[in-house]
Image (tube, rainbow, N blue to C red; front, side, top):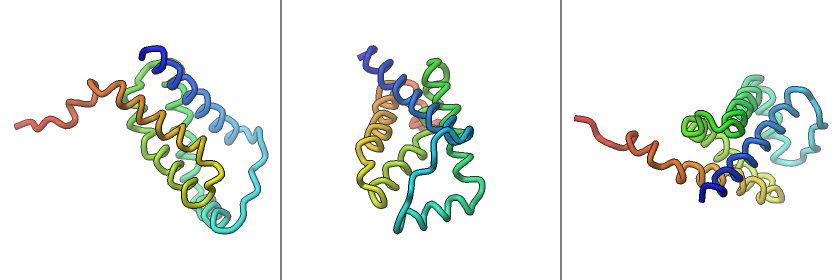
Length: 126
C-alpha cells in the first residue's frame, strides 16, 4: 500500500507541476476548442483570475505531492479542482475522461490513504 501511495502521489505531483508550469511559461500551445467547451473556456479566460488561481493551486499541491510534505492539506485544497476537472471533462470533453478519472480517483485514493489525519474534522466537540 505504501508503494502505491508514493506512486500515485508522485504521478499526480508531476502532472500538476507539468500542467501549471506549462501554463505559466506558455510551453505548449493552447488546444483547439469547439462548441460548448469553447464558450466555457472563453468565460473562464474572461474571469482573468480563475485559471491562474487553479494553476497556482496545482503548482503548490504538485510540489507538496512530490516532496511528501503537507500532503494531507494539499489533498483537501486540490479536491475541488480535481472534481471540476472531472465534471468539465464528463460534460464537455468526454474524450479526455481517462486522465480526468485518474486525477480525481488518485486524489480520492490519497485522501483515503491518509484518512486518520482527517478524522478530527468529523468529530463533534462539545
